[in-house]
Image 1 (cartoon, rainbow, N blue to C red):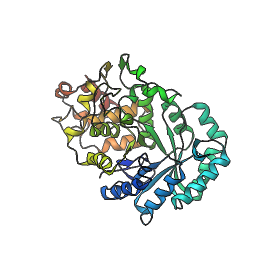
Image 2: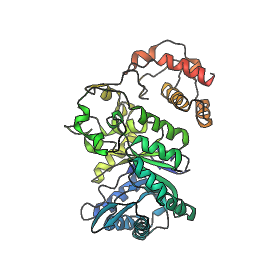
Image 3: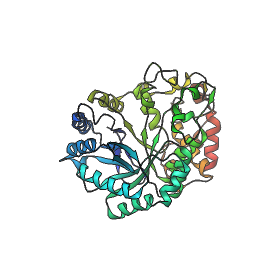
Image 4: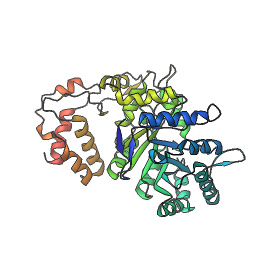
Length: 381
């Protein structure tokens, strides 16, 4: 298993995490089997948005004797009312739901307390003005949650929250199809078939700005819907091209700020298939050919950090240099963390000899030499 630091939290999370979709299956017996497999595979991070008390109790039972082996990302504002799930911004309901959740999970703290499902500006304002965010901060001060998160599908709302609210972890939907769609408050729009029938061009700039802002500010991204609910893997996929599990995971993990992919699993075998990413070859992880074959989509000129441009005769890590250049451009200057990460590279843009071999290999027609010249100018070497 591979591990990454979760933004600035100091927590080290497995790059493959668990979604909770399968926890309730087989009369909740699947939960224990998945946690046993996760421990064996080195998966230490999971998300629990489900508010069903039986699911939460099953997770609590599965964690007995090994709480310290897992990082829990569980959701505030997701409660169980009248026998069904409810997203609420009623502070008293949120507080009661949190206490019930902690009892069912049989733990004294959450590693990440995730403010649940915020896709609208008005909703974010209600979270701030209605006491929800203040309550999360109180829980953090008490040590009952260690870090504050937010889940969203809307890049503009997520950006505002990160810039305003002390959000340390963002749960966001990341895959090469959703990344084409503009920001919006109706989550159904990002996976609606009609939105993939027209010609689309490159990543939505707000989504790119979100990822780069998270990287710059040290906000760790935990990824939901990396497989678009299975659509990218099946025969009727919205992309029009079938991708593999490894390709989808690799794409998500190559976005700036991304730390872990929360892989939904309905069986141990499905979880093992996602975890096998860590043993996959570079060829098996390579998503470039699949993306380049998307019908009605042009990625021309947009660096996808796929590393197809390499090997460089000067041994420059072109994808990393380009990523740091984009982070600096998004900031309008060079943040200290970006400067230090660039400095730590073994070779730098200034060493580029302009041979152009990289451009002949790029599936997306990126002007790599221009990027290297610009990076050398921005960073000074």
